[in-house]
Image 1 (cartoon, one colour):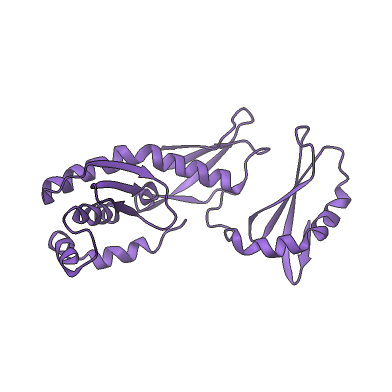
Image 2 (cartoon, rainbow, N blue to C red):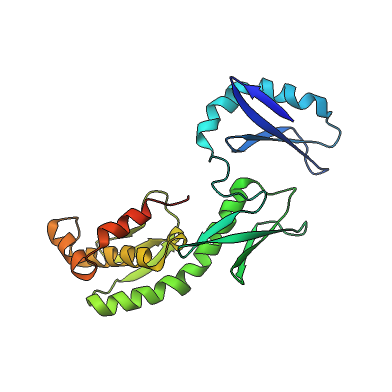
Length: 230
């Protein structure tokens, strides 16, 4: 079922089950509107609900990801350590949260069709990255601390929309676990970048000279980080 609002066409997806108590709308990407309704809701009224919320939909459309940033509907791929690996979707009505397992060069993604939205799939991927960040990035820190003789007070991993890493005045380093979508060289650059801030707290020429001393091609590596998928 499709609907057009101000020359923008949307695919309407109707979801219903006995647990849904009221009608709600959501946009999981720029091309689909999810309409959730109680079981007894008449399907021919779905378009009427959408038209009633036309202004909200058109205001919200620019805040949602384009379709297929990750194609969680039909499969697609997920980036991990610089490579894109295929997704195998497996529906499981018993689970509450999307779960990712990486094995045999494939991401097995378990989900509950009645509960999960696009954002739930993204959150599940974040949890996978976060869980693996310590195992993968900690050894990279060991390697570069040995090379530079620069040692942080503490290392933590967290999500950040705008920064790949940070180093406080107390030399506590925080790394964005979304880095796991990139190849090792890009992760190494961020680790080195933050370690150099232990020596130079700003982005002075001395700072960049220090970075360049250990990674002469860092500018090329920086370009890789601009290709983030989310």
